[in-house]
Amino acid sequence: MKTILCYGDSLTWGYQPETGKRIDINERWTGVLRNNLGNNYYIIEEGLNGRTTIWDDPSHGSYKNGMNYLLPCLSSHKPIEIVILFLGTNDLKNRFSLSASEIAQGIRVLINIILKSETGPDKNSPQILLISPPHIRELTNTKLHNFKDEFDGGELKSLQLSQYYKQVAEEFVILFFDASKVVMPSKSDGIHLDSNEHIKLGLKISEILKKPLNKL
Image (cartoon, rainbow, N blue to C red; front, side, top):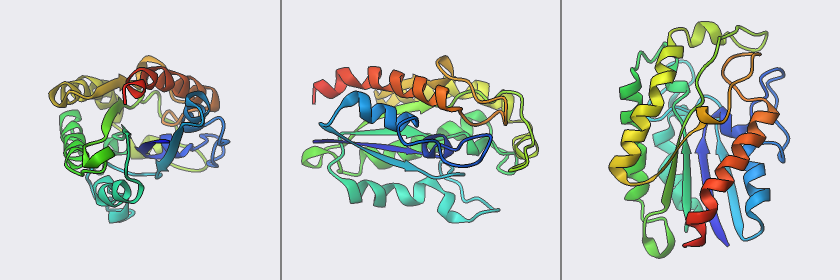
């Protein structure tokens, strides 16, 4: 059985924008991926709400830092054939004051950790699929969270992420996919995906992975 680690934030956890609860397991993109790839693949959903690339969150602490848990996570689940790296949205929060280029630098650090981890088959590196997050749309403060205040100024930077992520992917010769080509955040908060968008994303990622997985 081949293991695929989905390492991300609330977009991987499955945050439902209207309720704040978790989208059904079979409607989350990770669940759609599992159902489409079949029983020969073990899908690990490692999504944490608020997770950043490499930054401690001054409001929530260091456990939100994606760098801190990455190597332990890889080591716990090895051997891993593919790591799907789907982070960057939370780096757009205004309290971090990061440019799109700086967020891509954080992704570069995580990729280096994965490639040096020796957690793939026979102590090789796992393959990597880097996903650029969907573009932030018109932000809304909800009863659950003040997303408009928290991500103010992030809309433009989110539009720039894909070009920098693509450059990083080309540098490391890894798989790349721009999620904004397929999905759009909910009108409810401008950040998270509704169930139907999760399904579309899961189907697309399944399509991307089937060819390289068959070569393993």
